[in-house]
Image 1 (cartoon, rainbow, N blue to C red):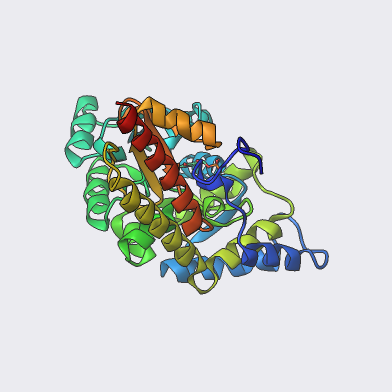
Image 2 (cartoon, protein in one colour):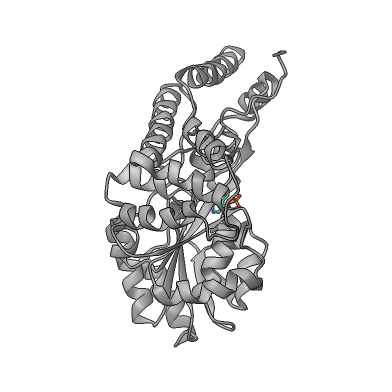
Length: 352
Ligand SMILES: Cc1ncc(COP(=O)(O)O)c(C=O)c1O
């Protein structure tokens, strides 16, 4: 690799490879013909395995992307003309260009909140502004949040109780639900249906999948609506077995939580080393696999010169960059990144 080759180590968890167990499962599912459109044995087995993971009867629909999972999940519970409350930086509002509104006919309402979380009083005040919310309105929560922070079961339960009181249902964007559960060390049920979540977008791609997510309906009425809704939405993959095979391997023997725990531990290690460097700041608590780093422009330039790619996240402060770890992040990658930051900060001190 030359000096200026792109280094993607901390750009996103989407840069990660798929885990060996996922690849092996896809290869195995490629052995023979299989019944299409989700009538295959992998998808049938997934129903049982997901229900066991969440300790609750549920219906699981595999899909190809997190955006699809969100759009269809919301389609399963939101009514046209209703409201979908979410964080102002919620993925469904900030990154999906109105996709969920297009699918549902509902309006998205963004709420402010520190470090990616909606506070109960903010949600209550937003509802009060409407008097009564329209029938079929929804609260959307992301866990882990877009800021990498994690809602606890109590925090979720408080918000979902407010939603229920206003006649609303609850969707959780769990693109990184494994990271949230690994951080909390709780049962998957505790942050989902037991805390009042009706439908979950269950992420796998960012944590070792090859390209598979799932919609998990804890609410049977949502599952019934999706049976046709996903056809109308154009999302019933004919070779669903390959998605289900990935998800089965992802869930087997708790691999999903072990992989996420590694990603979280790597973020913790990264931030521990970065904090030791005078002049750097970490403006957001690190609770999953995201680290937000505030460094001077010269240091950002040194990182770019070294080949690092990253995104600016100025919602967390001027010049703040986002670093994301994943299931395959290594100690060596962390050491190299920290050394680059340290050298750049030292050069600045010496020059100053
Ligand atoms: C919180 C969250 N939800 C949903 C998505 C969408 O996932 P996908 O890129 O698979 O559509 C992302 C992607 O980064 C995300 O960060």
